[in-house]
Picture 1 (cartoon, helix red, strand yellow):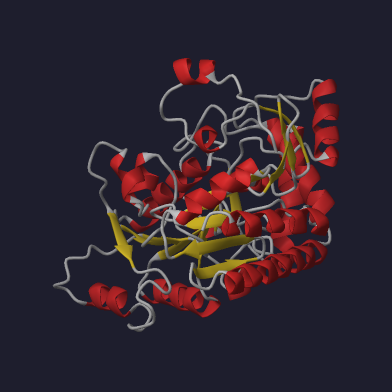
Picture 2: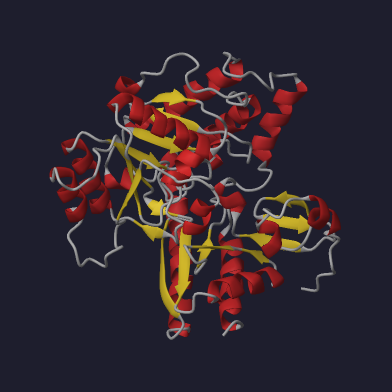
Length: 423
C-alpha cells in the first residue's frame, strides 16, 4: 500500500502530547463500516482493534445505526442524567430478559459515569461501603482504568506513575500462571489472610479480569477462577469481575466468567455494552449489596439515552439466541488459533507463546521489541493491530465479533507476513 504523507499538523501542534494510538497509526481516518476503516485519502484498513473492544459488532453496524437514527429523528431524549426515560426502561427490560434471566443472574443494575474506569470506581466504593474496609486485592499485570482508584489496582508501572501521588489501599497478588505453576494457587494469598502477623489488612474485595487484555492476554483457567471465588467466600471478601473488555461476548459467552460457573458479587461492564461505540457502562451487583444512598455516586452523563437505544438493538439482534453468537465467536476463535499455530511453527525461534479465548488473542515474542515492529508493519500493509503487555511485548488481536471468515483470514495472512518481514 502506498500511503501519502497525511496532514497531521493540527494534531501535532494543538493536541496534547498524551495522544497515543494516533502515533502508531499516522493517518487521518475519515469513515468506517463493519471491519473496515478508511482514511481521508481513501486507503482501506482492516480493523483488528475494534475500538479497543468497544466495537464488538463492527463500525456503524447498520441495524444499530438505524435504531439510533430513528430515535434521534423523533426527538428522543438525548441527555437525561438518571431520570426515567423510555429508552432506559426498554434497555433495562431487554437486558433482564436476554442477559440476566437466561443466566439466572440476580443483579441490580447501576449506571455510573459512562466510562469503564467509572464503573470500576463505583464497584470499589460499593465494596468498601458494604464491608467497611479499605483494602482491595488485585492481580499482577491487571489493568482496571486510569482514574486514581482504578490505577491503585492496576499493575502497569508506567500507567501507575502517571498518577503523580501514592496509590494506596491496593495489594497485588499473583495472577494465574504468574509463578509458572511452581506454587499452589493462592497459597501466598490465603496464608497472608490467616496470619495475624502478615501485615495485610483484611480486604473488602478482590478484583480480577478473567483474561487480562492490556496486561498481555493472560488467560485465567476456569479452575483458578473457581478457586478464587471459593476463597473470597471463605474469607468474607467480595469478588469483583472486571468484564469491561472481555464481556459482551468477546470470549464467547456474554460474560467471560460464565465458563467458570461462578457468580461474582459485582461485575463491571462497559466498552461494547452500547454496541455502537457510544460511552456507556454498568456496575452490576447482587441485590443485598445495594446500600447506596440516592446520589451517593452520580455523574452528569450516566444517562446516555442514545447508548441505551443502540445497546437494546445490539441485545435484540445478537443475543436473543445467545448460543448462536457464542458458537460463531468460538468458531472464529478456532480460525485465529489455527493461524497462530502456523505462525508459531514457521517462527519457532522467535515466537514465545500464543494464547487467547474466543476472539481475543495474543502473540508474544522472545524479542520484546518485536511486537511493536510487527504492528507497525501490519499498519503499512493495511491492518490495524495494537500491542499489549507491561513492555508492549504482545501482538494483540481483537477483531469485531461480526467479522467474516474471509476478512479474518485476510487479516491473519497480514499478521503472518508482518511477522516474516520483521525478522
